[in-house]
Amino acid sequence: MKAIVERPGNKEDKVTLPSEWTRGSAAQLAYGQLRERIVNLELLPGTLLDDAALGQCASVSRTAVREALVKLSLDGLVECPPHRPASVSRIDYSSVEALLHALELMLRSTSHLAAQNRHDKDLQLARRSADALDFARDAENDAEAFAGLVELHMSIARAGRNNYLSTTLNRLFGDVARMLRAHGLLTGRFPKIDVGSQKDTLLRAIWQRNPSLAAECGRQNASAIKNTIQQHVIPPRLPDIEIADLKTVVFGGTHCRQAAPGGKN
Image 1 (cartoon, one colour):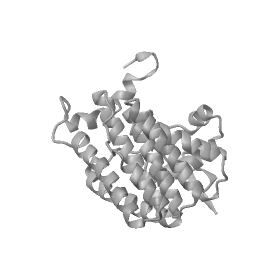
Image 2 (cartoon, rainbow, N blue to C red):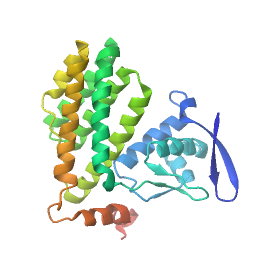
Image 3 (cartoon, rainbow, N blue to C red):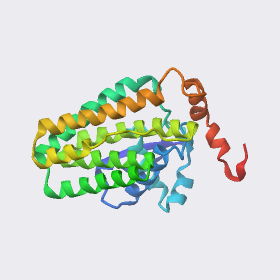
Image 4 (tube, rainbow, N blue to C red):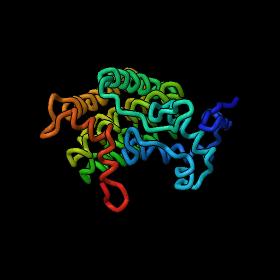
């Protein structure tokens, strides 16, 4: 099965769908690198994506980049309009409540399924993510602690063995991460998400195959993320920064211009 990506000049390039990728493929490599740059706002919303330049940076072919862009568009992180260059998607602040509601449903259901379907190896991978979270929290690195929390729940989602749920959760975490990162760019500090010792209870519930307790732990972690978003990202006013200013900076590419090579504005 092939997907057709149309480009200016009436050219058509056949690219493989993400479901056809092999582990460690060039497309998978390009996807991982581009997703990280978009989520961390190294590539700001609205940025045009030149597949040739991106391929050169990632040391992969333009076709591999185009395959990655297809999957990123499915993640909601890239827009691929017909006959126009792809671009990084805007951050949709108008749908925050729906996003947080969906996140809670996903964390509850994936935790529940993990307690039912996990293998011993799954718990080993989840424990590594939990250890990385603890290490970042001890170092007071809130951005890395959030990354550890994301990887913990993605490990749990994979343990649940439902690709539809894990794919959806991955997309939701991408949106949440961009909102938190945008706040960090403007205030100089990444918001802290306090899950306390809840992760230990969650891992124990999964180990003991207790789906109801695991689901409740997932809900509580979702509530911690929700509280942080509501407190720091969508209050009526940020300290000295209005939400409208945040949208102008992130959507308008002010940060991108300030970070241009040579410090040119």
